[in-house]
View 1 (cartoon, rainbow, N blue to C red):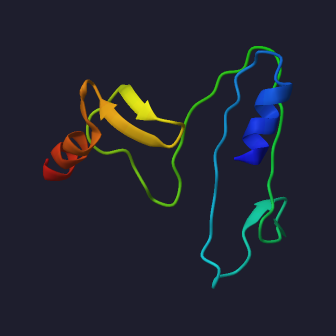
View 2: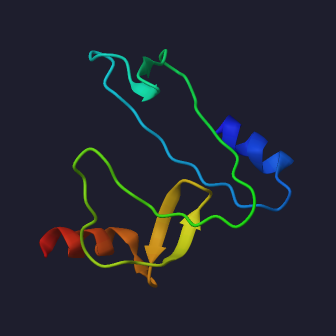
Length: 98
């Protein structure tokens, strides 16, 4: 979170896109760059300038489920409280029951 706030502070109005990866502590180190293992707590970033097309992808065998929702209310930056004008928990239950 500190890194993202720092990026926000130096941004020239560009969008900041962030993603993450994790690995259980009991497994081998995460390999992210050129086959080299990264120490625990490492961060990797890059800056893209100009017109850039982006596509969101999901790894680890995960896949999207259910319909797309629009966030209509939240608490701070971390808690969704409402999706499409309905309580977020109700929307989650709807997807889980489909």
